[in-house]
Length: 263
View 1 (cartoon, rainbow, N blue to C red):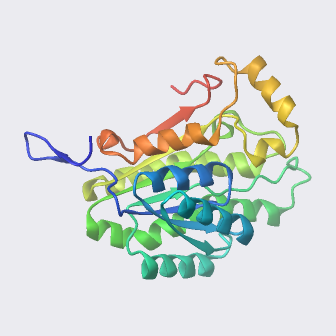
View 2: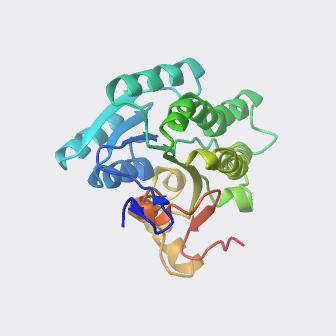
């Protein structure tokens, strides 16, 4: 059900056809799945991606499926580039209804081997960039009095990550970032939630294992007996932007086959 008016006059607001959606890291994996799914719901998708080839491919896939998409090349470690991409999004589509802070990096180093500059860059991309993006679009979303922010965390935010202190720290910060945005902006009818994905068929886990090993890992370690797919997370995102989730904010929702149970 979408945008239903209840008996007390409250509107259950959700994403509507024509609403603008910003997806960072939209060139593949979860980001591409988010773009395709929300485009199928009528969203106009602004795909933010550092890799020009993959970003353009996602835009082409959205258009081929009958959707509307714009690719914007952006370096999320550069605040000025984020502002440029934000201005380009506003010029092309207007104020976003939804921001999906999906992009992240996962440099694999032990604590003692990780250079401080690498740690700082990880934090810039994974948590400072979402802050900059939300701050940039926030005044316009507040003026519109509607919107959804979806942040993508990780089970590493809960369990830590050997050889990944920057990634785990940034994803842990994402959980409290979400709660704070939710608490401050609830009065503006802007909701903010986090998705905590489990191990899935994406580039990140495949960086140090094969597809066969990943499938076997799912069979052995995940209660549901399989790893996830980007489409699993996209289905959850579709719910979280809909009117069916209009009473939900500040939450971290894990989709991981039962591997990590969030209290």
